[in-house]
Length: 395
Image 1 (cartoon, helix red, strand yellow):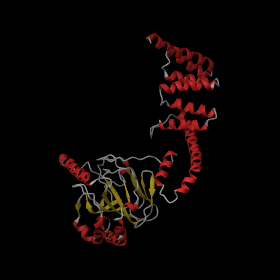
Image 2 (image 1 turned 90 degrees about the vertical axis):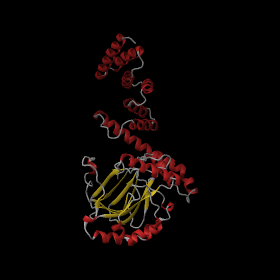
Image 3 (image 1 turned 180 degrees about the horizontal axis):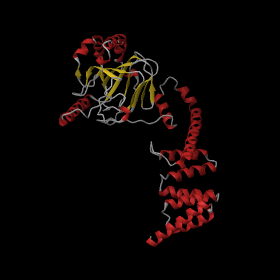
Image 4 (image 1 turned 30 degrees about the vertical axis):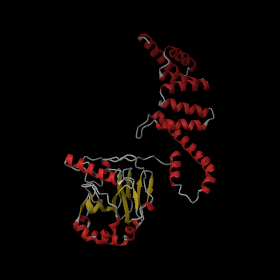
């Protein structure tokens, strides 16, 4: 295409734009088709032609123009939104919802959309949600017989799959801040029955709680702030950074035993004999009492490596304390331990008027073999030795 052709197309496009603003859809269509005969590779020409055809109520031609546009730019947001709107006009709500869903997925999280699009996008969300509800009813009717047939089988994984399909559940992935180990499952909360050694720890809950309460009688200065980030850290950490609002009392910290603390909590230490520790020199294991103050929130974050899992044994849990890992929320229940993957985004909050207390342990992922554990330990220690620091290893 020559420079003259390019100039001519710009002139035609501007002329068509003015015609559309003036409501002259027929004139705009004629001018845009003339421009497209010269160069059919301009997405904006196809989009404006579709707008002109909408005004002329030529639905089939409008759809053809939108398909041409989306063949050139599959992620064109305005084109997708207009196509979905046209599908609604053609009385095809399911296709419209599918197209709206695709359009909404084009918008990155947190992006501020143009004011002119806000109402359209709100309609898109409402349409997708209505379709999801209808689809859920439709699918559940198909599944009634199968659910009855497999009533004695755990269907939790399938239920999560279906919730994700229906956009009831967001997809969260492992995002370790230090070491990612491939081919490990992404599981938010593990099945309690997979860790029978927790029985002995849970059985000692009353003794463990009593020892913690005895420690806490010394006052808040007996606790250390759990978070010690640079003052330039993200603002969401300011409330708990260098603060005992999230205070801890270590028994072991990154592989180092606190002899005085261990001596003060003998029944707790005895209960941990069966604990399969995450043994990584200079980094693990860690066993710590975690005290979250009243009206305090721990912001969303991820842990350092998916080769380990985290255990919580709730000890003191007032109402209003909630824990989220990925798409799942749980309330701690005193004496009921659970295991989770902390490389999946998680957060905690205490909306009550009194502190919440949990014993936290780290363990190896059961999917990491003995040989892999030895290699991971050596490699992790090697990184620390190379840099002469453990600054890579954080919350």
